[in-house]
Amino acid sequence: MLRSLKLAAAVTAFTLVATPVFAQDEPEEPRTTYSVTMFEFAEDADENRWLEVIETYINPAREAAGMSPQAIHWVMMNPDYDIIVVAEEPDGMATFDSHAPASRMAFVEALTEMVGGEEQLGALREEMDAMVEDSMTLYTHTHP
View 1 (cartoon, rainbow, N blue to C red):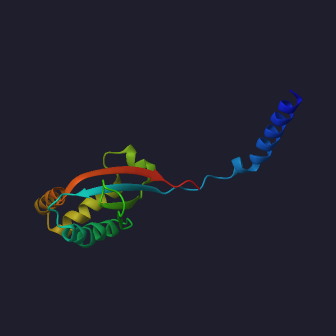
View 2 (cartoon, rainbow, N blue to C red):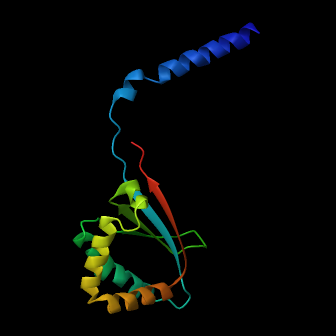
């Protein structure tokens, strides 16, 4: 019994020491939010064309809209997905508070202009969609 009380006292003392009071008064550091999208290409997909669209249109449109380019990662040991695209969400978690965040609208406007109009944008979307068998997007953010 005495041994249990000593252990409980030691754990309590450690917990109090491990939680500095002054840390609660510091302002919270900003977080960076990312979308992580995993793609499985369709069997007949032209992966080089998919990458060409990302490099020729998507990333330049993101940069024109004041966003950082997407980072592309090839998946080596996962049977479910071929490629992962990581993109910073410039509005952070506020991205989810709106159906039309300003950054997304600026990106769509820049992309529409780069491809030559809304009709061409629709055709490009159809082309890209046809190359993808399956995809999944996760959202995450940094913890300072």
